Length: 279
Ligand SMILES: NC(=O)c1ccc[n+]([C@@H]2O[C@H](COP(=O)([O-])OP(=O)(O)OC[C@H]3O[C@@H](n4cnc5c(N)ncnc54)[C@H](OP(=O)(O)O)[C@@H]3O)[C@@H](O)[C@H]2O)c1
Image (tube, rainbow, N blue to C red; front, side, top):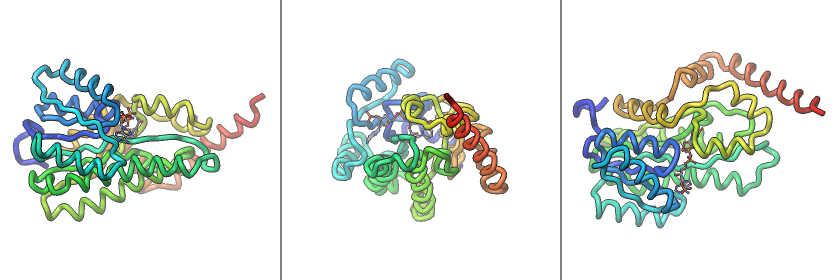
């Protein structure tokens, strides 16, 4: 829980990776509404400019800067962190939202697919956090790593993605313990399916049984996830979930995993049987 009133974001510098799209952009929009100064980070300059314009159309006096950067490039990340500190000061918040997801059956994944997801989801988060950790110590800051519900419950078609996102949860938990004594907070956001360009791209690659499982869950809006995220940050939560369905799934995994696993297995089996019997 933050002590400085209800709004720890006002006038704070917040860096948001993946800030040009989806969940990262929605978080950046909410941060702007709460008066934060924002640095949007992603690879594609045009998407960054469009995201900046989007935020300024919502909050005309918002302070929004953009930094084109590939978070998997450790040397470039270190240089960018130094440049950001020199130009705009030390950030108080770091939201690591940049991510990549490619669903598919385990035996069809290439080593390259696995390495790409580990590189963006885990190493990108690691690189950014390491580059900014001293700055966050100075500001008594807060790191928010975006994992996924797939980082808490593994499901068919997401072996590589789940491996990378479980790793983000483990990294965040260890980091929370390590940085607590320095006054730096760490949270991990684990949203379920959210209506973003990434989810739209995933739909095209989902095996039928993955699609069948996904169809049982409600799709969240990026704004719902962003609101849950900033609420969780204000309350100083480590694990931040979005929506009641996620709470139920996580509760079941913890206290009744057999029920959860059997129900997931039934959906997968039925979808496989449906595929085999299709003409
Ligand atoms: N959508 C969902 O259903 C869902 C559910 C749970 C968790 N998540 C997680 O939430 C996060 C955001 O996902 P999203 O759905 O909002 O995706 P999105 O709309 O596709 O946005 C991804 C963002 O990450 C940036 N990005 C990708 N690779 C990057 C790299 N190597 N370096 C820097 N920036 C990079 C993209 O910009 P450029 O391509 O221009 O770099 C873009 O700004 C991800 O970590 C994702 O795994 C998503």
